[in-house]
Length: 611
Image (cartoon, rainbow, N blue to C red):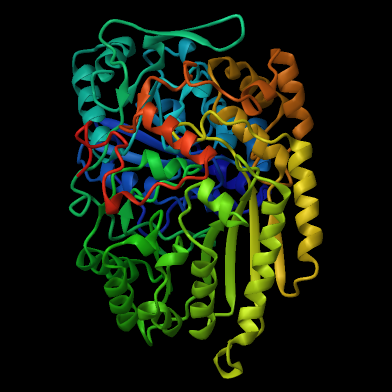
């Protein structure tokens, strides 16, 4: 463990030292000497981001519910803390017991964003764990990773011992139990990994070999004896009965989502063709309204938070949304606790609960039209109309909401400049609708935030084969839209850095050859690339050049149907043929209905996953 005197002298020298202290209300404290297995949950971003991550909170408390296991937390240190640790010759440590990462049995990373990969390498190195998996001995921790990015694990395959594909609640318990058995048998890590590969949802990259053709595409993925091909994702089938913490940790600092979050449902039935989450988290599973109300009240009681957020991919599609919102609104009225309902579908925002949100100090509404014209919304299978958009915002304005956020995407397959400028047309019409509402119903002045991201083609979606716009094209579209929005008063325009989105696309669809790029970037000092003040694109360009890798090959290249994709060893239950058929339908601007209206044949039913 870290010497507390050394740590006390170090922390005052860095910004926000509370990031590194631990000891918060709700933190789990155990006797380290009675723990048979020690698990470090590592989040590759700062404390304020990681403490807002619901998945990490769920798994932390779930694993700590096992008597013989002690789970602790570690977050990526800001550059000043990284330097301070190096200058003091101290390792990166966990918050609960100040134990170096190298002293744990498991070190687990949540990979939710491709641009956090160099932070993972930073944390391994600072934690005194060999960065490359091939260099680790049986005395080193087992390094695992889960989260949305592991549906293409290949760019990180050289650094991670095993990946958890899918939902972790059940599979982690099985992994820990297997490790305990292997530990009692004095088995080495190679033996443990070979047996772990037999657990559904586990991908052990060292058991798979990849060869490439002269054109750079994958020639073959071969499997060592005993490893599965493909690896099937894990899901929690009885979601309503699934574990959920009622007394989460209360952060010392103001974090990104400083509130109670309850998970309404998992999965989505809509089939938006760009949306990876909508495909990889199928099938839809819901918690009952009674369960959610109980969880929300318990969390408020144990934490003192003043906001409750209903979390899902599309909360408006939750079958009991009206009852849930109205009941919670009534229960929270007069308590000073607000209710947030993010991820609302425009066509599911109903008057039945619109007013209720305002009664509990709702902080604004967020909708995602995604595209500026109906043609492009049909291409991406958004299945909403302009009438839906304008009816929803009118309902919101009439219920007393003045702050509305709209999310769009540019660079989608089939997009023209007319589609881009259509975003400004929508903003102008919404402003007109606001002033059409009777003055006595308006709350303050008109506020509309238009946020536009750059399309990134993602694995396991119908657009996984698509090319991404190059940086210059994105930047031209951003300039044109910014100019068009100047004439719409009251609109705030946010846009993404196209360079960062290009890098995201590279690693989203990359292969194992990108490990050299990641190592070069890490050694050059790339950290926290999602933070504008630290992002250094020139360093990334040099990292690619040194590795002899052309980023456009991964980002801007259209794939063919018969090409072996780097992530083809991962099975989400959605068939590749179905995704290709959806791509073909997109090219004809043909929509596919919500699967609640009838099975569309995605493959889940045949795989036995459609609940």
